[in-house]
Length: 205
Image (cartoon, rainbow, N blue to C red; front, side):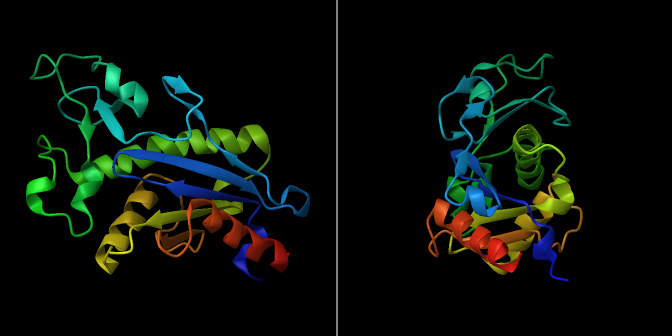
């Protein structure tokens, strides 16, 4: 039996350098064409994407204090080495062919992989809440397909890093799961990715 027969929801995940967002699609014939784009973010409603920014609770960078738009205006709950701890941003630039001089200097011991993982974990929690709110009873790990768009210039190593980060963010339960599909931004626009994969699944049911 094909793994696609278990899929009931497709999530289009747009993890961007400065802004990120996601959309949801219920894989039922009656819902064809009805994409739910999240517009309810921590700290601000009514926008389709939120800032790709993190604020950590302490300078040990073990726990996220806030993320997205809210991280722009919140301070960490505990005092760090700096009186004004700056939000962590632009960490996606460590992937791809971005020149070293344009990459942000991350405070130690934080790594770009941990920042990406932490951000995806927080956005993933919100996506899971949406799935359970709109379609109760769906098992996220069993019934959800994640479609991640990446820049066309990403290497196979970059793709592997993104897959690792999504796995560590607890969005898939197997690092090599087919329930994560990675595709380039040049192939389709953001919504076409969701339409394409949903149509494939509906036709196979």
